[in-house]
Length: 143
Image 1: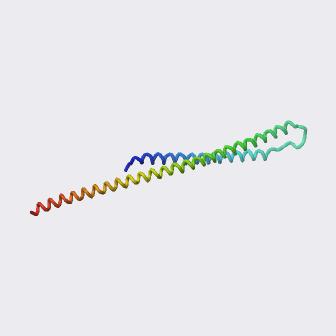
Image 2 (image 1 turned 180 degrees about the vertical axis):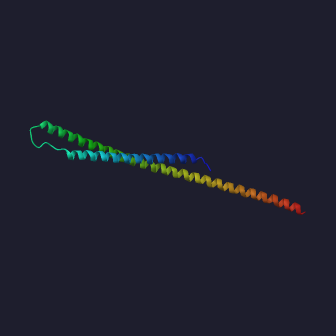
Image 3 (image 1 turned 90 degrees about the horizontal axis):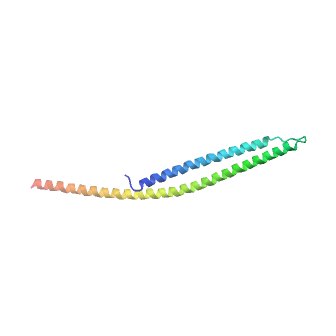
């Protein structure tokens, strides 16, 4: 049976599902950022500095490259933190929407209970009326 809350319930459920999918996306982003940061860390470990010679510019270039790589790692860490914050926000929004969903379901259930009670009263009244009609028919037929 459909009530005025049925569509609201469906809408809240769809919004919650959308938010849950968004959380999954954020978790996959975090995994991607961690992989990229690990790859950059591996590259840093593989850098071989010149240990002899007078080629200072090569040493400077490697130093600049390492500085840039460390900056990239920082960027990945910030992006990961941003995704974690977004996950926390989404979880809070899901809690709020779930609370609303429970309210709507409760209200819908109350309406359905009232409707069921009215239907049962109508059926009882109709049964009583049928019983009265049958009694009257039977009692007139016996006279």
